[in-house]
Amino acid sequence: MLVLAITGAAAVGYFLGSIPTAWIVTRHLSGKSADIRVLGDHNVGATNVGRLFSRRWGILVGVVDIAKGFASAGIFLLISDLVDPGSGDGNLHYLVIASAIGAMVGHIWPIWLRFRGGRGAATAVGVIGAMIPVPMLILALPTALILARNGNTSLAFGFIVLWSNVIAKVFFDSSWDTVIFSFGLFVLVVLTDPRLRIVRQPNPR
Image (tube, rainbow, N blue to C red; front, side, top):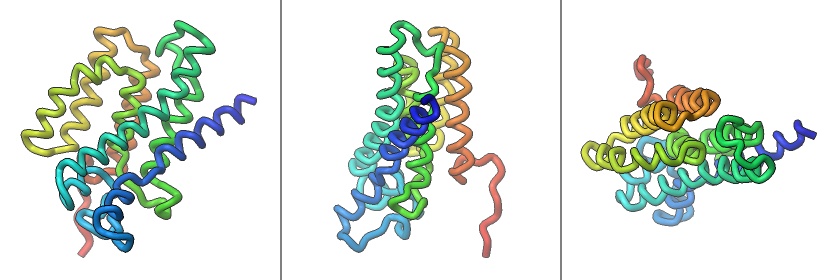
């Protein structure tokens, strides 16, 4: 029964995460023949949309992608709290983990786009925001200032994820399960985002 529940949660997360926001917006703005996978930096994400069209469209895509991650984890966090009130984040439920991972996998490898999606940073922010909302809100303004100053989404992503977990652990006694899981999502984005890799491979000629 637990296996079926975990599978269902992962499926729900995958479905939400796989909604190709950037691809849909690009087709809306440029016509049905437009494909963001061959435009700009070929990334199916908010940054590419912002560069191709305008910042406001990029922000829209980013907000929706964050919402996908937030909803994926938030739905099962709510269910977990209803089933076991007061458990807090000290008992990170298997369903939450499954749904959150499903959302990340869905965003990065969506079936609708032949498994070629975005890098998952915004969706990861949404997932982590559902688990440690107060620290993420505290850092929302500084993160926005980083984006406004230099437009570096990679730096902003690293800043909010890393420091929100430090704040969550030090000041809110967040569980190590939550911290480790959050850092796991960070590593997943690093592995799928060449802009965040410490060691860069030379471009093939």
